[in-house]
Length: 273
Image 1 (tube, rainbow, N blue to C red):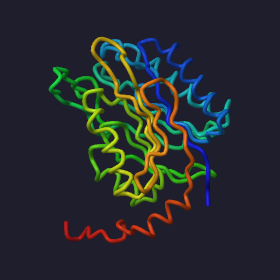
Image 2 (cartoon, helix red, strand yellow; image 1 turned 135 degrees about the vertical axis):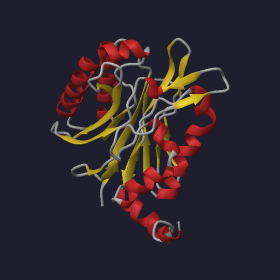
Image 3 (cartoon, rainbow, N blue to C red; image 1 turned 60 degrees about the vertical axis):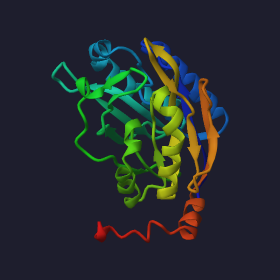
Image 4 (cartoon, rainbow, N blue to C red; image 1 turned 135 degrees about the horizontal axis):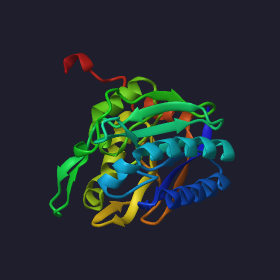
């Protein structure tokens, strides 16, 4: 049995990486003081700004983000997820969107490049074309044992709309699903919590969803509501719409109990589909 506190951080990231790193460290420290042992930063935690500036900064940002995660994990003795940051592909035109999970000793535990890209025209008039400046990853997200805690599966934001990805993670042993995001305000109000609870319920797994919130630049506004959800689909913590954290306990024995009570994973009929 493992019982520990997890924190899903909520930020309003800007186009100034140094400001973002400072705010992120403040929230990491506050979460550690409250007892968190696994902390997730949202997608785009180090930079939220226009595409060209992100491309221009990507080489420097990639190094700084990886270094920041290692430094914070060691300084505060916590497992830390950087939920998504730009990594140059080498062509000068696009980046990857990469999440990294670092152990409390600073060791890289897992890395994932976002595979589903948000190319959507929304009814509110906003258009998003991630594929114009981002290259999708070419590998499925990993499942990794966080020493002394539990098995976690990685994903990023738009991935949450693809349930087969989470079946893949759970089939490889995930007990906790990390879903860092920068969900739009328009889609978030109707879909964010519903999708998170669905992923939790159908996979009888904890969901930890760090989030961006508020107005970033231009018309870009994020929904907020970073959450921790238990394997029964109950929202254990919700950060609302301000910067801060959703912090709640994770009990891996509770995962086992729920999977015994509701054995839907065992009842699957994959050969029929």
